[in-house]
Length: 303
Image (cartoon, rainbow, N blue to C red; front, side, top):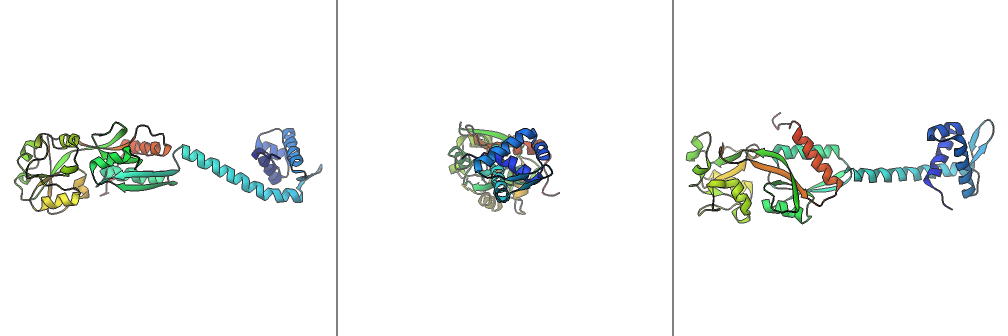
């Protein structure tokens, strides 16, 4: 015996309408065809499901028994199809998101907030990375699905969508001689210690972030620090200068340091990165959310 879902749908429609004409209209099929499908179902089950007279249609005891189960079967089938279609559209699933420090600033926060609002059935997991390189290697190695990274990209397996380009700031002790001005230049930084995660900083990042201030990389006397808080501790003690994207001044503002724009430094570009060979609709949905956020206004933390 082989009962198809369409047979159950036809049966439920007739059982709920108790009228073949109305059920046929509801199903958008001809009434003779509907009657034939019901007779076929009854023949497969070996029992009548309806009592038919010229005046009314009624369920038999077997029909009443089938109705509850048929509704449950159809509801499960519809839910399964809806779940699959949602997954294909990127509306269900799981997403592992790599980040470090303050991610992509306010833009990154807004991307996460909007994605959570618009894709509530997708479970997200934030995974911290210990270094800028690890942010990208985690995506390359599939330890994360996407990540908020700083450019340049280090691996050809990755693709990225820039979400924000920010001015570069120097973080100084308030009594530092360069703090007296409203801005600084890279050449002015060259003769002062600069704190950075030097031991984990790939060469492309050294060139992009420090330019003429450190053309040959780390100089003697440059302290090594991994975290933002550790780096700011060096600045607050007057030991070194720290270079950050502008958003860091809002996430890590404190009274014992000051921020000055490095006017001749290139912008710090933050991006959402993912593997080029990814076909995941969930990843695609996250990237599309990032694009929508970038295209629209970002709510300020102070508003």
